[in-house]
Length: 562
Image 1 (cartoon, rainbow, N blue to C red):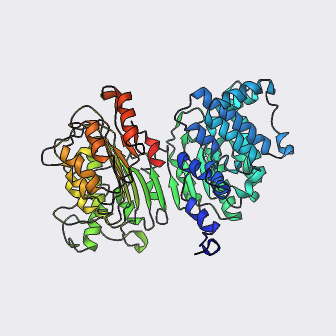
Image 2 (image 1 turned 90 degrees about the vertical axis):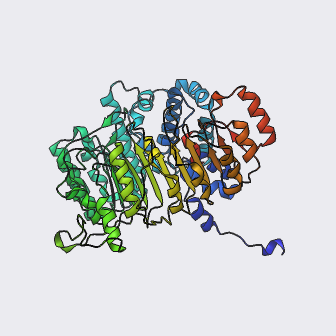
Image 3 (image 1 turned 30 degrees about the vertical axis):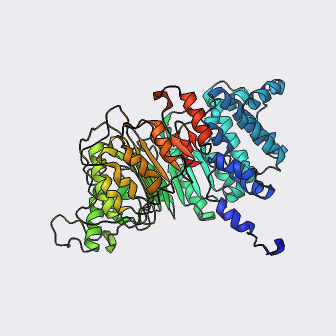
């Protein structure tokens, strides 16, 4: 075939593929930027759609280095504003120390890359300035740039920057953080916010009756004008990293003010669990309830049986029977038990609405050990036909000497769509590895246990992992006892493995593991705690020579997104 007849992938197709990447997947994005001009132009908007947060979460920068780069970014953002808008800001500190600023930012590759990339572009990326909460700018960047002394002064300038940001590019804004104390400043901007989809409400700890009424009125006015609001977040962290916890029950007025609410993140509203019965959850596709404490609602956890569209659920488990109704309804629908069985929770709600099994695809649950264990048992059955991601995190130590999860055994419950399974904390010790036969399409398995105690359990060998032929990521972080037979079987059974993390595992040596896996075709990262071996530098050099494609060392959490 001649070169002129070679198939060409349309830019629209490339753009669609790249749209699944996130701004914090820096290694992947930087690699794509270096391929050619086309991929550079498609990738840069993704990498810099949230530059402030990218710097804020950088793992290798000190707080002072982050502050230096945030000041550089803030200057760039202000320079992109229209001159008339810039004049509305207070005078900035004279740029006498620009050379020092440049040296500080150039000390890191992040600062240098940010400045060069932004200067080489035509602008237009800062319309994501407040796509997520950037209130942390008031802690260091704003005082250094504007010379503010008090928190009140810094917050006032941050609010002023928000107003200018909306004036500059409000017609493109899809998400915005609104401080409860500054609502009146944004009434005049409602006409330009025609694309606004997500609203984040902050400073709920200090909210008053009048400011809450103003917020509710603002939401209703926007819905009447545009009708685009779909998502709500209540609370979070303040600009000075204080947790913004609010316990006002009247905050229920915020979700009730939405005409169409598809995503609700209660974040730091501590009364969300108590008020859940009053929230219209039928159309919710995403629900985050970080607080599962306080008085239980009248109908308990039966609100889940009203969630007809729920795909994403992040929940602090409030009760031992949180998913019991979901599990029993699933069993009745699949004729595993009958509706006449004792204690079966079924029926209809007010208005004749029928109970449903929520079609949850991504489930993130946390809580105390006993409640979490029961939730895993019931959710594994009730949501088995929809789950794609399941992550559980326990908040207390509880040494389990024997695994207790059954997932409906002796019933043969299958999870055909589950791809990512994660247990963090001692809840991982409740997992029976023979249950992995229920997850034939699993691509990622992470079991993380803290402490120096052995994770081994009699009658619960790790060999069940070897049945996962599609596995790409395996993390066994903790004192998991490995056998030489298990290690030798990894390259034979798990041929598609890309990341293998065995840090702190026992009974085998690093050389034994590397000897077994160093010829695997796709493996590029092996996690091991080099502090526990002798002459780590000599070991690294030796294996870099024999297996240069494999990076060896401790794996940090953000590397799993690369």
